[in-house]
Image 1: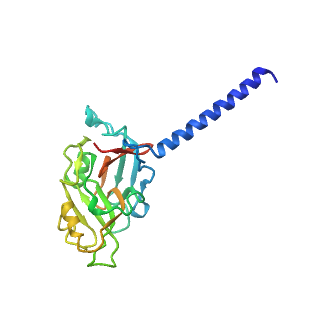
Image 2: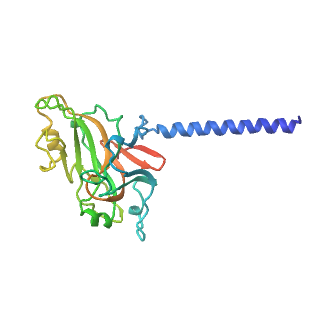
Length: 261
């Protein structure tokens, strides 16, 4: 075997080894990107919560949307990076009652055990369309949902409720909205009728937290999610989900964590 041949083989192995190392490094770096302060990022545990899915909806990390056509400037692209969470649900596609679909894209790991009373900053950016308004009205919007253990002394055996934020109408359509603050707009309610903050009796976030403070242990979070359903058809996108001091940047390749400004 010639020297050139031996050198070529060795060089080929070196290239393959280097490429493999780069792939591993890239994978590890993406799986746990550092936050701005250097602390571990919460990014690897996001996905469709399968037990909360009804029908065949879509909650997909994607590029864009960019636009709509003719829209330029900052509102023509996702507020963080190049991607977002695309959501599609239908209003009449199952044999159930109601026949509409439901989907939650969330995290069942990283928020588990956090106190509900410590929720101080919540919200997101949304890509709303005029078509969605035609389907269900101006407040046809996705939600933020926290599955919680209420820990109410008045209902000691009830260990489950969902804390839901219902946004007001999006401030713009056909483009990305500014940040929509869930602590000052829209309303909150709890499923299960454990407190006075029901879907029929709209509450602020502070009022919900107060309703959970009945002398029992602190209410704790089980999961956090962005979701839609079961009501009207909706096709749009969400990005920049904020929960306290973290912003969750939805990208086609995964969920990146940023420290909120």
